[in-house]
Image (cartoon, rainbow, N blue to C red; front, side, top):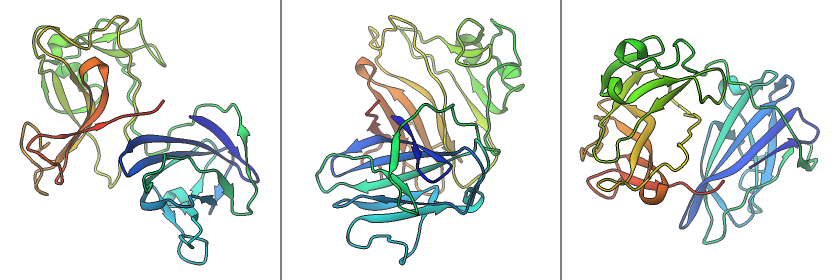
Amino acid sequence: MAITKISNSSLSANTYVSQDWKGGYKLEVDLTSESVAKDWKLNFNLADYSIRGAYGVDLVPQGYNINNGKGNYTIDGQGNGQTLDPGETVKAIFIIDDQGKNAIVPKFTSLMGSPISDPISAPAPKLSKSAISVGFENHKGGTVYSNAAQSKDWNVDWSNQMDKFASISSSDAHSGNNSLKMNYPNNEQSNAGAKWVIPEQKEYYLSYWLKFDKGFDFDGPKHSGGKLPGLGEGDLASGGTKPNGNNGFTSRYMWREGGKATVYLYHMDQPGTYGEDILLKGG
């Protein structure tokens, strides 16, 4: 991944392929503005590729080069994302059919057509105004992350075994002073977890920093693999209960044998009884 400044604009783009599969891939673009960007529009080219879906931004209708047969596209912001304040970031996600070719990252240009510049150093993007951010700063190091402790950070619907395996650490933190530490036993399933309720929205993007201890054994003597935090809805369809449109879904990060990273997704089109593994690739 590289952050690039888009010439003749106040926007920087962090562009990367987050998933790659046979016949297609998922392209993510984090656009951050250095100053007020009002009614912004960007062009890019994906000749010989086709966009199956776009999320977080709008593909501008005919007349602005969308799908004109030469692979030229134009995007602009949706809703509040049409105008970006200084430091504000909007995420664009594209599902792309690659016709059997390698996944590529396109170059973005402003609507004036100036080329994108070489990668530059840029500060980490600021969270949007609607972001929910939890840094576990409300606790002392060593605090057991029980239901009561969780309630200081989240709207807790239920919690299981967290008081046995979860605690606050002041020795490892990506930012601030604290992080949440989880212990995974090597000879049993911990069954530790919690449901934290967040406000209803049409779209969510989940991001968190994760660190495994040096020498972490991804392949225990009895069990290999483990679940990590993710997103879900409704009745949290899981455990072999296939989503049917009325019982919700779950999408959880996992590691498999050897530490292989996946998204474990329960969705209506999953091929089997249990959730589908979507392998994560890239940097």
